[in-house]
Every structure is written in structure tokens, then in C-alpha cells.
Image (cartoon, rainbow, N blue to C red; front, top):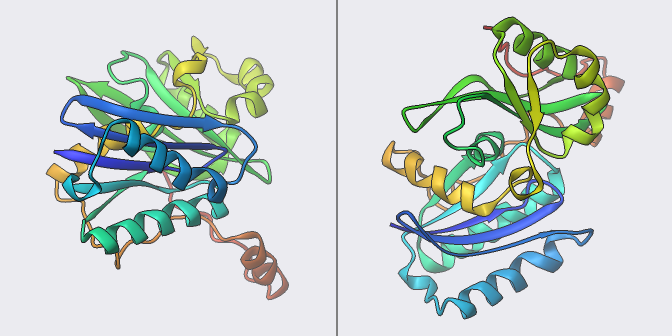
Length: 244
């Protein structure tokens, strides 16, 4: 199966093409440029370099969120536009799940952390068993103290990754009671190759949609929506209860 993958949920912009277990090409930039400046030129350069006819791909995988609202909208619009023009299905891949997939095969817990601001993190907690990703805590928007409590209760060594690591490093050092590590640079940020690899698993499980159906999953309200809710006295809905 040939998959074109797009990742734009954070500062990182990444596109990749995989065919089965073969990574044909990946282009990743972690620099202060908007995804509207980077994604399409990166896609064009990648397809030219690997001599790819986009009509030959089977599906388009896209990191569906959570993450930057603007980044997710740009990635989603790019995937939708390609899907509609090429008549290809979309495989929506949870951002935090795909980040965990960077550390495929580890025997430790995996905890991706994205800085969600307002003292919160987009996070999840995962393990790998027999080569399969297993979710202990599904991706959620929570206070770092909540995810730390769950890690300590599980009592197993953990690897942290994501841009939230630098934000919460001091808290982790002071509060995590189990052995922990921070993932190195080559696997500590979002990667389109991981989105593509997990997308193939999701496709086999029937997780697929049309380009017209696809929309991002923000997990929480935008700043404008939060401010409107606060003015109306409704507050912000928190997400799911993930306690184990």
C-alpha cells in the first residue's frame, strides 16, 4: 500500500511517502515558518525527488490532532484538497498516537507531551506489545500533574518526547518517581513517516474516510471559543476521564 502522509500539528512540518515497510522519502522541517509556506513546496520537492505520480498513491494519511489549530487546519485542508482532486481516501491519524509510534518496539512506557499552553499538555500514555501499539491513556488535554500521577501509579519506566518536554522538564524531574528518559532529537518530534506507518494499521482496521468527511480533532475549544464560553458562564469542557 502506498501512502502519502502529512504532519502539521505543531511547529514541525513533515511529509512522507511509504510503500509497505519501505519509506520512499520524507521531508521534515522544524523551523519558524508557517505550514502554508512549507507543506506544498515540501510535497512538490519530495514527489519530484522520488519521481512519484500522485495518482499512484492509495490513500492520504494526515495527523488529525490535537495540536496547533492553525497547523491542523492547514494540514487538513491540504489533505482534503489532494483527496478530492485525486479521488483518494483519507486516513485520519491521532497526533499523539503517531508521536508514540516514533518509539516503536520499546519496552518502556511512552508519553508524548505537546505544549497546549494554559498550563496544560496534549498527552497520552502507550506501550508496545508484540509489535503493536497499545493505549493506556488515550490522547487528551490535561494538566501535567494528572499525567504524572498516572505514570507514578503504573510504576514503570517511561520515555517522554515532544515539544512539551522542554516546557515541563523541571516538573518531570521534581515529580516523576519512576525511571524516565527524554527521547533524542531524531525521534522526539512529529514525523510524517510515523503517521504513514500507523495509518496503514488504521486502514487495515477500517479507519478511513472520504476527503469530504475529514475534519481535524482539536480536543478542546479554540481561544476565541473559550473566551466566549467564559463570558457566557459555561466554562470549557474538559475532555475524557482517562484514569486507569
